[in-house]
Length: 104
Image (cartoon, rainbow, N blue to C red; front, top):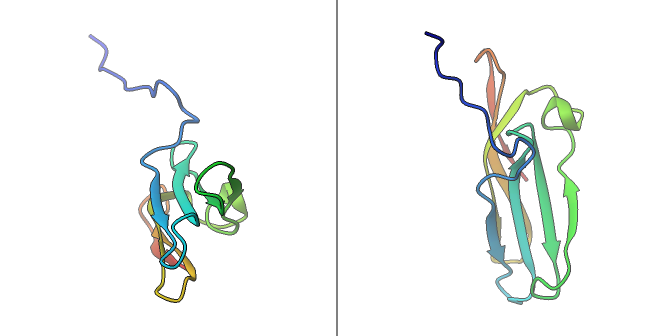
């Protein structure tokens, strides 16, 4: 008997998106999520309450975006009281040899 193997239904799908609203203008929204089976972080920002979005891959984190880590886990977004946007999460190597936290 062969062991069961899990295969994702949608391997390129975003997982667990996080959303934040600006403290001074609720129409300013930001969302972040791990993309492509946690190989990158996508950040999307809207200034019109979600009618339109500007998306970007956060650079320099994983190998897919010019960084050195293999995976990202739990990216989240928040705004400071002054309105600055912060992205946080964890970065990991596939073999478990290193990990780091991202913030900024």
